[in-house]
Image (tube, rainbow, N blue to C red):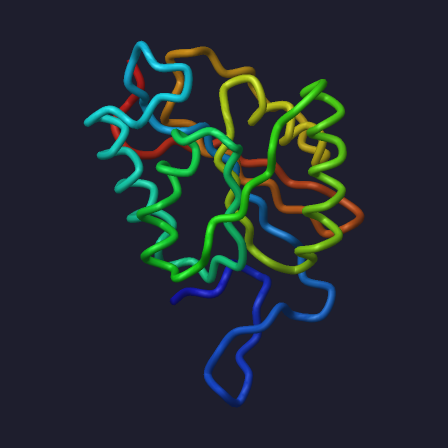
Length: 172
């Protein structure tokens, strides 16, 4: 596995550990394409392909934690990556105000995963808000048709760097 850029040092056992004062890398994605007609839909064939593309893109990173909302589509988006990096998916239930949830979850992520790499699968209405709650500037809103966005938030406790990338097939 690759160590997260600028965040890891090698120990005697050959594994990587966060470097002292290393930044936290939070990678945020919206769930992949979903089927229609169900209140808690699964992934469509295109969504399954996108979930595989996510595993391909992030699979060589030294991922420490995976989080999905309570909805099936966000968990299914992370399952191929979970298998590839051998990390279980934790659930972060979204309830109440999205802004309040995002502020509390951002604080929890930064406290619990300092110096680590974390991937979070959310929704079009939660992913940008979470990125902003983590201190990222210039985060675009997502529409219902946006599935290929990948937000990298690098947080060192003093400053935040934000990178907006795309992966898999281009959203239509």
